[in-house]
Length: 465
Image (cartoon, rainbow, N blue to C red):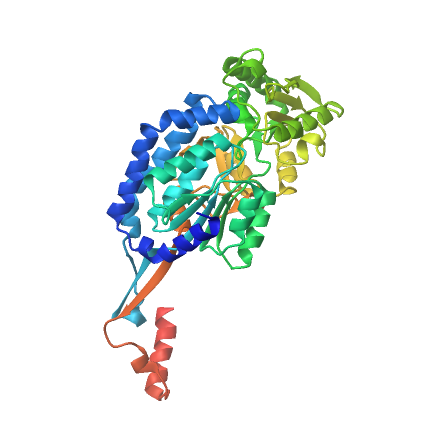
């Protein structure tokens, strides 16, 4: 079936899909849940290992577990989310009742990235399907084994008119974006997000854009610098830093700098040994092009000011770059020109908290601002003086694991929210419903405006508002 035929098939099925029962939708999601916990688990683990050496344990923790958690939340709440929600009736509208109801948007397109290709494909697919939409999933061509496995999995469980996978690269994505959808959900880079939004604007199609950016971390004077270093290192070098919410760079109060540096080094050695590029649990860079991009940034940084405090080596054959920490590089140098999306960590020292806040304010709004501090005053001050999609305090990455917490960016880091009920609302239209049962107020205040009617209007203005 061609892409055009698939789109036409799903368009024709849009109303029927919206009419499916909660029981039917949950039955399909339960089949997917059983497949992920059973016969498909090993195939997906193997696919991700072949694509970029992701360990099976990490696949389970970061791909399958959050996907299953999302399905669990949907199973527990879908009936309530779909039920009409009664809203209050103001006094002048006595005799009427009003509700809101979540209705499916229709035909949806999900474009997923390569860094977490299972979770970031199936998470929005499940939510959109649960809302009553048809779904076309376009997984990344950079993880071909995983994308092929996802296609086979979806075909085993869903009918093509309700959920289907389109494989391919830029030409296939371009072909899809030339078509009209009722909602597009995209996860990826800001640059490609701009292309998606431009294509969607031709049809006034609403979009959810889960992008990225240079998410900063601030370690203040009240923090435990050593513990902060360990936690930042775990978050930064998991998946070799190929995470949109990874700490991109860190501002550390000078009093905590040595402890922070030691924490980072100790954590890296504990997780990946003396040579992470030889460690089987340290993930590859996804492809040669991305490896070359990161290696070029690394080599350029070596010609600039700053202290290369850890790492700095690359293994082209293994397609791995050692976890690298550079202290006080140039603020406009190679490490700070773009989102790193790799295992390179610039660390800046400061003495006045307003220094990093001023610098953060000059950059595009990030996906996350990470704060390490014991001082509640400083935590609140940082939050008030920064703008971001999210804040995480004294931990990094784990905020994404709470599927009850809305997740999303702001400005260049994205628009719209995902996770739990917030994600469900992205794929639905909150439709207002107004019912008039008794005599409406217009019978009393419609023209002609007699003295008695003017008196009623003046009474309303004076006493009710």
